[in-house]
Amino acid sequence: MYAVITTGGKQYRVEEGDRLEVERLGDVDTDVELRPVLLVDGDTTLATPAQLAGATVSARIVGDAKGPKINAFTYKAKANVRKRWGHRQHYAVVEITKIVKG
Image (cartoon, rainbow, N blue to C red; front, side, top):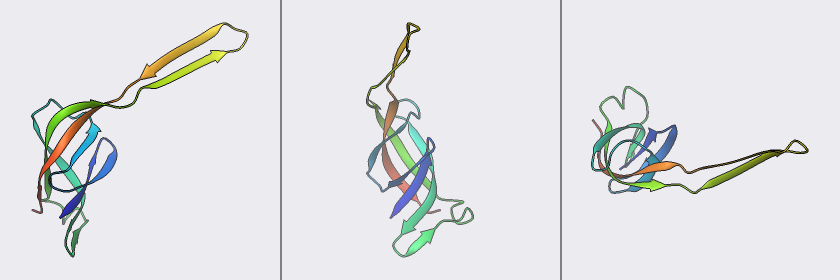
């Protein structure tokens, strides 16, 4: 059985025991409930909101992670205007513990 969940504006295909990096959700060692968009169990596919009313995906936050460093630089010629900045996204590492059909 697998599910497609949505979190942080992105969708992920997950099974029980999977670990994935998602947008930051909370503190380490806390349990979270994620909303499934699609649930597949063998030949059965649940996709409509009425079918997914009782379905849940339970996950546990097991750690933190950081994305790659992104550096940017802009300047304007002949005006002595220069600007440099960077960004590094923070992620939460979650482990899928249970998928319930409902």
